[in-house]
Length: 152
Length: 152
DNA sequence: GCGAATTGGTTGCAACAGGAACCAACTCGC
DNA sequence: GCGAGTTGGTTCCTGTTGCAACCAATTCGC
Image 1 (tube, chains in turn red, green, purple, orange):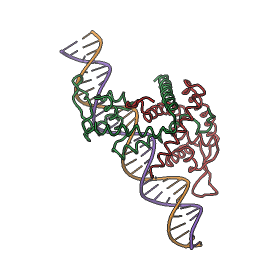
Image 2: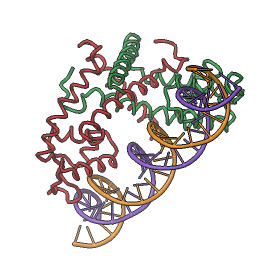
Image 3: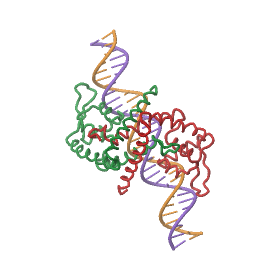
């Protein structure tokens, strides 16, 4: 571990800069190709992968704010990529699911997303990729544990 | 590498979620303890580590937007943590450097920052920490290379 | 050296995110 | 089943961010 009196070696800073670069790259690609923003794409990814969800469930699955989820759903609904149907169990919420055109778009987006991911990870070999994902998971858990500890 | 038809295993998503958790943690700490936002803290870190810089140089060192740098400097100046002095070589810009009280604060902040970093990285052994930083650097380079490639 | 192009810094503006307040529907205790 | 408290969803408002236009000082071509 280098001595991070220099900002450049401070891990949270490095994470922030790197993640920003990656996010910008992907956001550009999605916007120019599909007209989707990242929150909207995340919602589509979840619905396409595992079917109908309520907004509540989407908040959990995407780790986004409930306001962000709500806005993304509204946009997707206006574009007829997603449909709402009543929730028999709870009159306050709806089930959201992809429409036919939503599924078509999902079918194009996911391979595209995986391809971008592969391009990004090109410099890493298979073992390093697994390692990287694992390290991220562990740091994530650590950050959440620390956050919890703050009496909140 | 797990099959990321599930959002949770998509690397850019995982990076975003993890980095957000880390940033929130740190932002809370700095704001409640020193009343500093992250951009302000970054500027102080650079000035404290390697002395006077112009805004132009700070933009490069912190990787932030020049507007963000300008605003951070203005705030720090108002709080008398940073001082501007004329630049003999270029009348448009100034040299920015920490005042005495800025240096005092820097002396407290940096150990604190390193301590947070250590806490965050607790679950990783020394080898894993080095590995993580190295992987981040390589992915960062990869993202920048891809960004460059986009005709921009 | 004089005008054109460039660069450092600043201001204004528009998009975005997140929190707090709010409404409607549900659950629980009694 | 009635009232208190909770939860899903929505709206509103605030603060932050980043881009684009801009001004002033500098550099370059000639």
